[in-house]
Amino acid sequence: MVTVKEITDIIEQLAPKKLAFNWDNVGLQVGSNGDEINKVLLCLDVNDEVINEAIEEEVQLIVAHHPLIFLPLKNILEEDYKGNIIHKAIKHNINIYIAHTNIDAAEKGLNAYIANKIRLNNLQVLDPISTQTYYKIVVFVPEEYEEKVANALSKVGAGHIGNYDHCTFRSRGQGTFRPLEGTNPFIGEKGEIVKTDEVKIETIVPKSYLSISIKQMIDAHPYEEVAYDIYKLENEEEIRNGIGRVGKLNEAVRFEELIHNLKETFSLNKCKAVGDLEDFIEKIAIVNGSGADYIKLASQKGCDLLVTGDIKYHDAQLAAELKLNLLDIGHYESEVYFKDLLFNYLEKEFIKKDINVNLLKTKTKNNPFLNV
Image (spheres, rainbow, N blue to C red):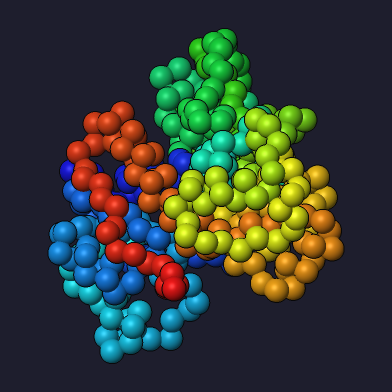
């Protein structure tokens, strides 16, 4: 049987929690990492209907996009709306996990998914997450202990390159040392020069994980005094994560025609548009959810159109001043595909890892707006 943590670790390979905004609240919000799971329910929001659906379907894990717990709770009362949901979840052993701005910003996350639905080419990140400084750790380990040290490094974030982990280079050689007074050598005797077969392990680590990587490496190493080097690298992380995507259509399309096409793509009865319907649109920015804060950036990047949700009156005025066309397809309508994205991703990962867990997409419609 698979546990909550094993499933959420797979989700975090797609959408690492470190990508979430500081104000956000992502990760496991209700439950226990060690709980066993055989059924998962995917949804946009956790509301009363969704928790009842999870109870009826005998689900052990809900994975939602929007946080159930966002602001600090002063109390959890069954009589309150959220308190009742949490009470039901705990009573029925239902875990609740959130992937929000981290899956928005992820390289293959929700923004990228929506951009691909629009069939944009040559995708770039609209608002990149800043690049990391990388370091190389080089450590010398006696033979037969290299796996223990290498695994300790990998567990805390070293040796990760793109979608690969446990990345190391190893070479063998001979190390020498002489233990002096006051030492307690792992190999050899005090006062005698020791020659021992060792393995040099080289791996890469981002600055944010450097301190913990060194600590874990030293803790796992058998020597009393560990010989290691740290090199600051010039290479930077490729900009693959961040909010929004920018891309181009195969050919320019009149704004009015594009609106018609996108209404079909997103199954919309109506949407709000700002701009000139006769304009030809080629370069498009997409920000799922609420993207009004990116109007200026989309304009600066030479976009003809920003597709997003939650556009207000003064946002529309700003876009008109900047001669940037806007299409407000709705917050819900641009994020409901969270369920499809995660379903497709988890289904493939479960098959690869031979994990037998049932995946369900909620039948509950979470959109608070009515089409009238």
